[in-house]
Amino acid sequence: MASGVQVADEVCRIFYDMKVRKCSTPEEIKKRKKAVIFCLSADKKCITVEEGKEILVGDVGVTITDPFKHFVGMLPEKDCRYTLYDASFETKESRKEELMFFLWAPELAPLKSKMIYASSKDAIKKKFQGIKHECQANGPEDLNRACIAEKTYIYIIY
Image 1 (cartoon, rainbow, N blue to C red):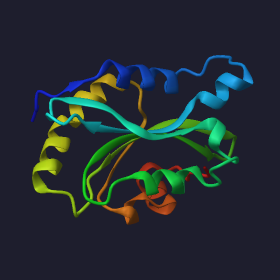
Image 2: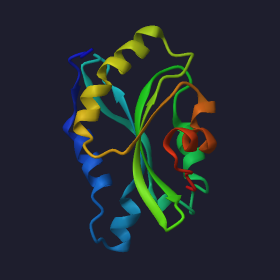
Image 3: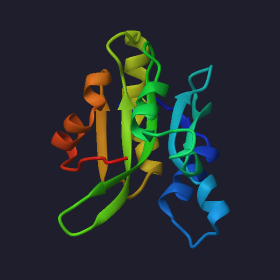
Image 4: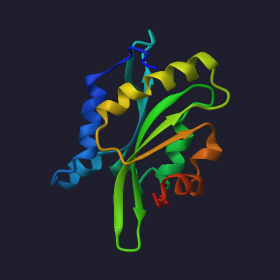
């Protein structure tokens, strides 16, 4: 079901910047985003970046010790959101980083909000080409490392 919601250009730019890891200076790496939260505009017609809801790579280990826990804490208790998280995990062979897309639809969110976020998910997913891991979370219990590992077969280390 399509909702007709548009995706802001800034959302696409952030996705591209997170997906493409160019050879960068240490200062540029610190400014790269580890996590970003997206929301619907006030008129519910456009998916935008939620102001102030991001974690920079440079914050990890400095002001934020556990970026995944901090990221989960940034999500609203009573409304829906889309998120991108640059997950670090280990396989038997090596350590990897991959983007994860989450639809956050908590139990306490209004039904109308859940419906519009669910029906608009395809619009943002079409812009996020190449995402390997996607999860829907209906509460904090769905966003623990063990639950995500069960759904995606990866265990986020940070």
